[in-house]
Length: 348
Image 1 (tube, rainbow, N blue to C red):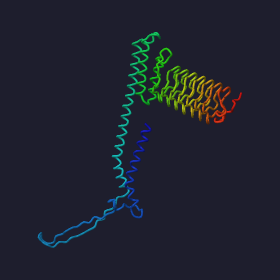
Image 2: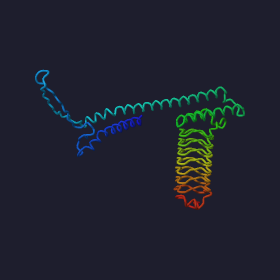
Image 3: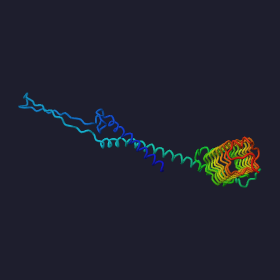
Image 4: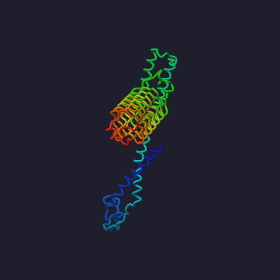
């Protein structure tokens, strides 16, 4: 709401300024830069010539007296110009307000559609679970796979329809978690799901299947993603601070600009992962596999890298200030020289 009002005020100010400029400009081109309207404007000082004819004698008399007088007409003042400018600004203001109202109506309609899509999804999945009494089905029951396929299809569809609505996307995933549909027993496959900007702080997604999923700019802080399948996932710009990623599969995952402050990455598999420019200060990378990973310009200060594998990893400009690197495997002298604050060989 505040942004809308700020935009409105800016629009009114700009419109008034432009309109007033139309009247102020003639002053600049008038003589001697004095407050005087230029003649070409037609609103400067002027004279009105009046002619009066007076007949003398009878109506048919030929004698006439013609009187010619000049009546000065003062030019428009600055206040007259501003008043006119204000009058001209009103239509622009009405058009602007109309556009803002129309935009607001469209946003409201779009919000309603997304809410309807979310509610329709929740109602439909709930009906499927209840009608099929899923909780009582044996894991070997063939109908379980069919139900999982239906749930997966509907979930991926609703996530796409929610576009950039991270809050409602989060509601979808939280529903699946609460319904125990992401557990080992049911394990809905969310590979390639559109979860861009999803709000999932503190959610338990342990062992979730999220390979190739778009989780860019997602809020996954304090979440449990231990042993989750995040192969080839897009986590660029994601907030993973205080997140448990221990044992997670992050092969070739993109984590550029992600926040991993104080994250738990023990034994995480990050072969070929892109971790450039990440902030992972105070994170625990012990025994993590970072072979062939790109850690260029990453902040690894005060991290625990005991037993981590960094064979062929790119460490250019990575900051290892205060990091515990005892037992780091595969470290080459060239890597240490390219990194900052990283001694070779690691101190024992």
